[in-house]
Amino acid sequence: MANLLVLGTQWGDEGKGKIVDLLTPAFEVVARYQGGHNAGHTVWVGGRKIVLHLIPSGILHPGTLCVIGNGLVLAPAAFFKETSDLEAQGVAAGPDRIAVSRGAHLIMPWHPMAERVSEDRRGDRKIGTTCRGIGPAYEDKAARLGVRAGDLADLGVLREKIADAAAAKDPLFRAFGLPPLDVEAIYREYAGWAEKLGPYVRDVSLLLDERMALGENVLFEGAQGALLDLDHGTYPFVTSSSSTAGGAATGLGVGPRTIHGVLGITKAYTTRVGAGPFPTELADETGRTIARRGDEFGATTGRARRCGWFDAVAVRYACRVNGVDRIALTKPDVLSGLAEVPVCVGYRYKGERLASFPPEPWVLERVVPEYRSLPGWPESLHGASSPEALPPAFVDYVRVLEDFVGTKVGIVSTGVERGQTVFLDEELRGFVDLARVRAAAAA
Ligand code: GDP
Ligand code: IMO
Ligand code: MG
Image (cartoon, rainbow, N blue to C red; front, side):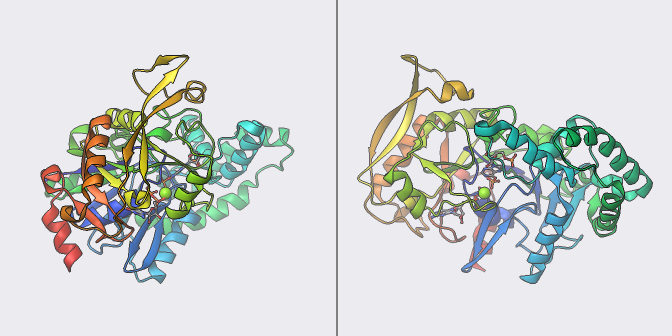
């Protein structure tokens, strides 16, 4: 039995959805542990595009159980829109396929309202959030004002919790000229969700324990990326949850030793959506060319993603913080044809070379990246599916990245579809049962 944690090593959108969907045949369970519908995980199957937001990216494989852990914040309307969109495409998304932790916090109508107030108040220091109510829902969780999925089991408790939260929020909203919350209307709406969501709600920690005792394998699916982690990211330009490896244990109620390996999903260049420091950003024609070729538009909000060169300082940091065993390198096909591919290998700050990544934005905004320019590869990588199909100049580029990042690359992704992937077997041995993945891809 081997359980694998798959997470992003940059600022999100590294291609986690593609890799999770691809590897799912080697796992019986796929479990999300944090975030909410701020995530947008894209999966392409046979020319058809499916974007998952809340539901784990293993859902397209019929036998797989998909789990939403206590570490998530769940908007019931978004959840049921996603299940019905999936059902419309012939993907079963009922309670026999999806389990929601009773400890998952619900996004309530006042959360997106509070987020708009908070973003407006920041003026030109906005975080540039997805405005899904994610941050305020986590704020209420920490303030012990949250409503959890399990609370829907008792409508008396639900009503009381909504009334309590409204009493706490109303003075704040009044100060911003907003009307008081309509407790009755909110109660009626969530009592309606209670009936629909009830069959999905489970004791997820116990469920995972039972499944693992049967010898089943679990893939833990991270959302966002290490540099958006609430603690280890570029605070305050981060999301409000623990997207790093530690979040998997707390966000699902499993022990740390149930995680046997960590696969870091790493884009061959860097992107960021929303505000915040980005040392290798290319605010020029090259950046726009990469964005165009890489189709870098947000899978959730449709916003243009900022693009820049690969930052080995940042990825090295992410690999350390997460204990990444192997990297899945995505989207190098986008860089084909460049004469030279610069990679950031160090930062200078006030004239000194920094020993490691400084997550503080006021430092990151002022660092001067040091680049090493690597020879590009003229050949197209698009769709390559075997190590022999990789041009030597690209293989050299991968070796140099591995040295700078201090972690081996086990997978190279060369396109959006499952088959557009190169497995470097000797690197992945012990982490993923590739025979099962290959058999499913061939079926
Ligand atoms: P996630 O949030 O990490 O799941 O990533 P997103 O789905 O938000 O963004 C990744 C984008 O890159 C999606 O449009 C994917 O279909 C696409 N993608 C993933 N892997 C590759 C690849 O190797 N090459 C190319 N060209 N596109 C890829
Ligand atoms: P996936 O899982 C990229 C960013 C937002 C904003 C910051 C805080 O698809 O990689 P939030 O709404 O979470 O409070 O916004 O985090 N952000 C993401 N950026 N990919 C994501 O998810 C993101 N989820 C949140 O743009 O800068
Ligand atoms: Mg995404």
